[in-house]
Length: 122
Image (cartoon, rainbow, N blue to C red):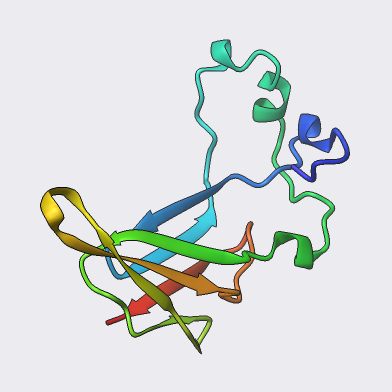
């Protein structure tokens, strides 16, 4: 949804799926929106409409940062679109005093509505 128009009512919105396996995070356009439409009465028309990308400049779809919380160790760097990325890591306390890590990748060179992979390098 572009946040300005009501084009989402005609199916113009991004609905992406994200998966993380402990090392790599992938994002891609969701194949199908499957919702119980009885709880989405206000958005039922949008969910049932044929999907299309919003009329937003690519800069408006750029992912600003990705934050991983609860990693078992600190990544040294990350890779996205063949480009090595810096990672800012910070130790955090998990349950029972266990040390976990929070890692932030800024400007990872990816956009919503596209397929991409962000790999953490340990």
